[in-house]
Amino acid sequence: MKSDLTQEILELVRMTSTDLPAPVEKRLRAALEREEPGSAARSAMETIIKNVEMTRKNSTPICQDTGTPIFFVQYPSTYDAGALTEQIRAAVALATQKTYLRPNAVDSLSGKNTGNNLGDEYFPTIHLTQVEGDTLTVDLILKGGGCENVGAQYSLPDNRVKAGRDLEGVRKVVLDAVHRAQGEGCAPGFLGVAIGGDRGTSYAASKEVLLEDVDGANPDEALQELEKRITREANELGIGPMGFGGKATVLGTKIKSTYRLPASYFVSVSYMCWAYRRRKMTLTGDTVSYE
Image 1 (cartoon, one colour):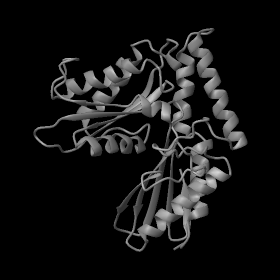
Image 2 (cartoon, one colour; image 1 turned 180 degrees about the horizontal axis):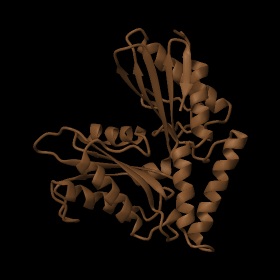
Image 3 (tube, one colour; image 1 turned 180 degrees about the vertical axis):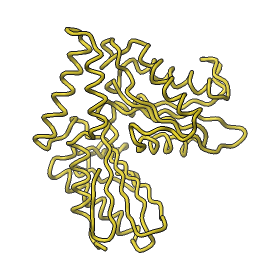
Image 4 (cartoon, helix red, strand yellow; image 1 turned 90 degrees about the horizontal axis):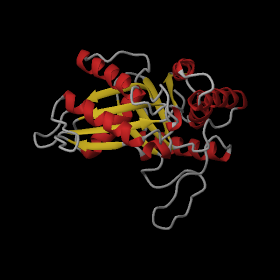
């Protein structure tokens, strides 16, 4: 078992920032082909694809906004959670030094940037879960500020959009969030949706569900159908890439249901821009793999 994983986590950050996952790129290329030749939407998609190719080749950030680093760590009891946290923070600082990340950690009161992406215990965000077995997994999402700004949370029932406490109500508020964004947050993007929880856990779950396989099927058939319907109907809104109009507004939707109090029914929407930057590192023994 490796005792110091700083360099391995640094490589995870580099890959996440500079090399878009193949399933995401595949959906972007498919979306490009659906847009009309000569349209602003197609031009935007062509620029996006060119950017994906260039950043992979040059190992440079996909977007100038390298986002909030959000780590989801599942670690065996043989690992020291405190040491893992410090190694993650060290890797983030190194990644900033090597320009895989832009300095983004700004003190909300003073406005001062730390210069190394290290703030308090909330920046970078690190979720730690102890698991059985001997395999360590580290999932990383780089969540850009633009797409974070158009995230939304609803408390059902919501009379404004006539949404009740059911899956139809969930559909209405998620589509309302997409409509209100109007392409801001760099469409076409992906939706992470959480039903239930309290305000905090609901938002956390809406981001965690973005770790799911882009092409994977939801084990709950009702949610699977709702995911497909939301994606289809969002694309019928005509918002299109970067809000220029067109057919590609949402490239995929992932929904997770959690428990809640009887008095509350939250629906949280985490929007992910076209630069859907997420990668996973797995370590068993001394063998490290990335995907």
